[in-house]
Length: 271
Image 1 (cartoon, one colour):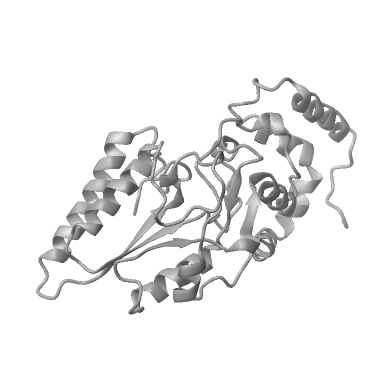
Image 2 (image 1 turned 90 degrees about the vertical axis):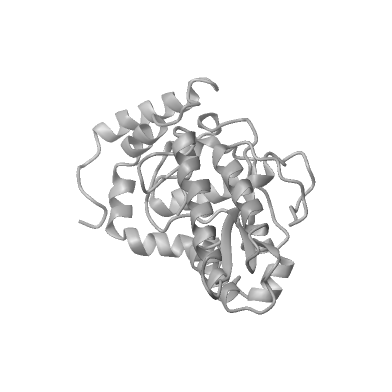
């Protein structure tokens, strides 16, 4: 129940409201641990952390491991580090699971998608596999006192460019120009998940499964997006805060697409 940097269910993001996010994230975790400690039979805790706590690591050889030093650069990641410390020092039985990128099963376009350079390493884990990892950790006898990295494994290790291209193609949008994306490395990387997979056996799905899930959920809307692709791309690219940094190539492309659309019949394919 964290306030996160992007796509927060509250509508407020941790990086824009750091003091409030710390009160919720760190203060809430402190309250939870205190309530657990006061129980006659204290329960165990499986804490959801993030691989964002490693900071920018693109200059280091992958993969990241559970013993790598943490260098958080976001308020969100700093909150995760503080909570990990509290969990370790709580006197409770604990396990910490640091998650890779788990994308929502929904068509949610957010300006944050442009914050990651296209050549950034990123490991994907399907949201259902992440849920399975937590469920199995809660009933495991071998995870306590361990920090485990939760990712999709070697077959889910990509450059961000590959993930975005496949997801945007599945949505009917198509790949977006590199100039719309950041150039400063982002805190994502590939992970060593050998131990977590050995203990939890959760790596069942890949990005292919996610793409199939997206297509199934969107159904006819994909055809609609494709029919009006130039308009969709134009308004999507307008959300990029980097659109003025790399020239106007993509602007010309979307304007050309809008002119092309102007003379196109206003009907969906197959109708």
